[in-house]
Length: 174
Image 1 (cartoon, rainbow, N blue to C red):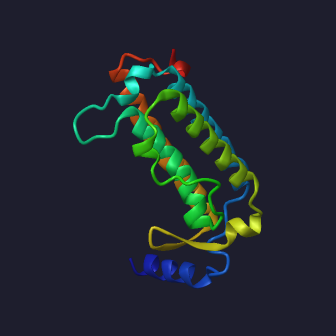
Image 2: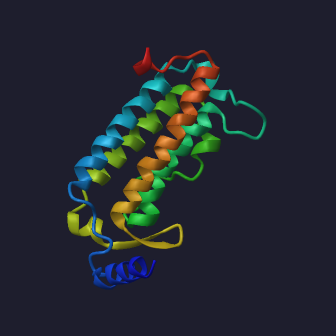
């Protein structure tokens, strides 16, 4: 136990605080690949859901199909705006309440995905390594993009469950 404690102390002592938040090698490429795979599935699923299911919710007090898609779209604008200092090209605060029809939801969801693509492609490695705040923690800006794709994947899973409850088979799993 004493050796483990000593080893941990030595490890902590030699970590350079200036590089502690550096992005992993090839982070942008990995992020964009993971994001694209999930974004493609999410948009395909949103397209496969019938218009009538957009108001469906599994029970009272739980987000509807449209609200889940718009929640994802809102965060696709919110993370870059609030945590990367990029500003947003539009007002995203009311997405969940204001957008309920399929055509408009698909349009907003797809536009939010394009926004994230431009954010991912438009950051320099130095900028991704710079510090920012995320949920009260000091992190590298790259961690915000990681959180964004993690958030989207969480709700992709929710959307798959919603689809199956509505007898919709996700198009990629046919």
